[in-house]
Amino acid sequence: MNMPMLLAINLEYVLNAVVFSLLGAVILFLCFWIFERITPENLWKKILVDNNVALAILAAGFMIAIAQIIASAIHG
Image (tube, rainbow, N blue to C red; front, top):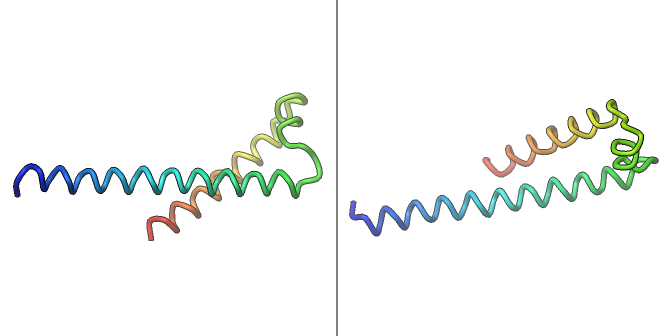
C-alpha cells in the first residue's frame, strides 16, 4: 500500500474519532442539562457552594452512566 493511501485511511479514522467524540460530548452535556432542569434544586449551587459531596457523587454517576450509553450507541 502506498503512503498517500495509508495517510488518507488514517486521517479518515482520526476524523471519525473527533466527530464522534464531539457528538458524544454534546449529547452528554444535553442530558446533564436536562437532568439539571428536572431536579428540584440547583445542582451546581449545592455542589460548589454547599459542598454537597453526595450530590457530586450522584452527578458523577449520572454522567458515567450516560457516557457509557452514548459510547455503546456510537460504537455499535
